[in-house]
Image 1 (cartoon, rainbow, N blue to C red):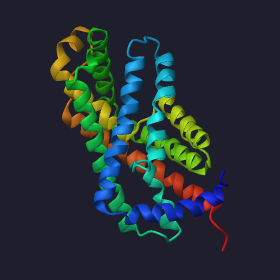
Image 2: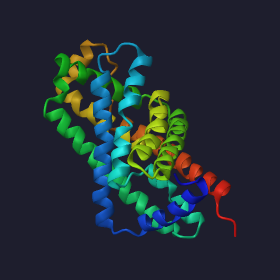
Image 3: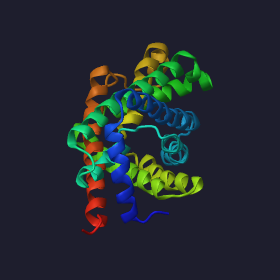
Length: 266
């Protein structure tokens, strides 16, 4: 595997390439990454929707969700949270701030499109009918819970999440074999899911899926005692904005920390 210092050199060039890629290529790669992360959320929700023990449910989700990030890394897709590591390229003077911001904006929009497209497909193809609609109720409950997180708490949970996601990206890219890269991505992401931290791209699936499911399964959710008042489009933005802020702080901060500790000596 690469040493941390070798990783800094490697990612400085990788991030520089990311920041100069064409808009079309970035958008398509970001669409794919949004789909993969959303697919991880779909599988985690489906596997855990009937579990009543909160701890067990998180462990099951934590064992399944990370495969979304593994697919992102192996396919070379563009993920907003992981691309916060372009900070390393910026500090190494291999990329410009404008290029980094351009990358993050395009990738963020592409991730959102990919995640929402999968949410639309899942809701309207009837995948949420599983267990007599219990999966739909679980999806709505999860979305409503995320919409109810206070702003400050969402920022902190976003910071904690992206420290681990970027650690997962680093550990994965340090690997020189497919199993090594998969394990490197798996463990930190599993930690953030089990810890209950907030990932903006995952929430681009979770909350739109809940909002869309509300139209089809709202009555079932109401009968199940789900508090629906917080599940609105405005509260979706009220979650996405602070979580994104936290993800940026956590990811860019992690990248800066790794660079400061392991930067090449002049």
